[in-house]
Image (tube, rainbow, N blue to C red):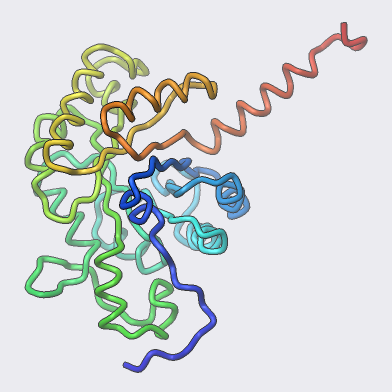
Length: 277
């Protein structure tokens, strides 16, 4: 198929480029149905956004508008799908996401199915992503299909969330899956499943996370760490602790948390004394 000349700017996977340059990369989790917040994340200088279709109260139609906003400000956008259904993974990638974050992956077979759903079958590989040239990802049938499909396979990011004791037990078989790009630590769910609700710093939870990090680094698989500190100073300390262990990707919290914290700080600054004393 001949490529038609367009004015569309090609997408660049800034996460892959940043990792290749040895940089530390960070991005927020976007749970509010707002393309403008995506633009704000780009204006703030973040490297990626993680559009949360699992816990965010919106559907694919809204996610597409958020993906458009990410394109406009040059952000690499991943979508956290609600579950491991292959058709959901394929649809968000066809919509223009440059990667997926898949929840509650607990063994190697699930990880393999996730990777296969995100990749086109080529050169005898095991990809199972449906081949359709007329998608937003391929700029509505204006891309040369062979070139596009190969570039899509090279660029797509597949991150799986490790958020259960079963996933920790099976981490070696998960990490053995070819083309798995990263394991995202899910300490909140993990703590809950381990019987320590909300205690992400519990020693047993931290020991499980340490095991995942150690195994991933042995395999050369990137780890995405979640930063939970409520203030910038604490977050910087968290980031430094993880970075000292070789972690280069950081989720810095949700847009909801960031907005509410800013509102509380402004409210506290105003105070309640009408005379300001």
